Length: 308
Image 1 (cartoon, helix red, strand yellow):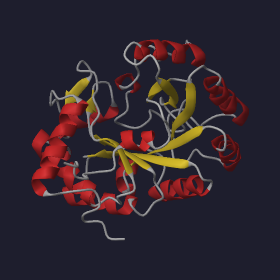
Image 2 (tube, helix red, strand yellow; image 1 turned 180 degrees about the vertical axis):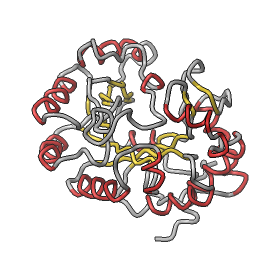
Image 3 (cartoon, one colour; image 1 turned 45 degrees about the vertical axis):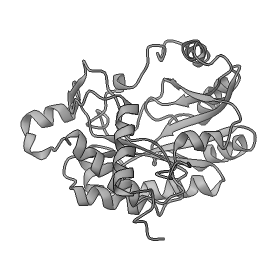
Image 4 (cartoon, helix red, strand yellow; image 1 turned 180 degrees about the horizontal axis):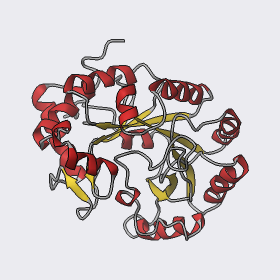
């Protein structure tokens, strides 16, 4: 019996591009952000603590090549024949002098078994000169540019100190996709000030963009962030979803998304010692199983409520 279509899975997206199993290896290449260094602001996004997603091998004192080799060692125990994508993850990985940015990408691609790049960045940090280089690179190697969208609401973006608008997102995504480059997005569900209706309506707005992939995370309150201090001062401004409530939100969100967008994940897992809320005690695959079960029970699928 065939498995019913529920959503466009990121694993299937990767299989459509690679004959072998591939794994992303996170990198910290020493970039910063314009809302950290004073160009647009200080302190970064109010929710951000990069310790929440940097694995142990991902340290700026190590070269890009060494980080990748250590990442390969970590993953190859299970899949010796695996190939890898260098994931420029920490901070804004297109923000810097063009020659320096290009050098870092090229260093990653020289590492054995690295078959492509995934570049995480901000919508306001993609100059045309870098796009020219990426367009050329894309003709030879796999490339996915992932933009931190976070929200489609400008008031929310200002509140969390993003330093860009949703119009910046639209511009960057459209310019990148127009070059033939796979273009992804990242959003956070549950940011302060946004209602349930606001959040699911966001899916319809994003569906109008030429996105190939989308990564969805729940809002997490992390120790040492400006948002954690804001929560102490005004806890009434925040709503942290119960796990079943968030499952329903994700299912509603998926149904409003254009079916062609590949969905990479629905939750993020921060280290327990840094996490304040919500603490569901679920691994990513356990949460995904709950989403799939709920979708099957509701006869829900990606795009069911999407209007082209």
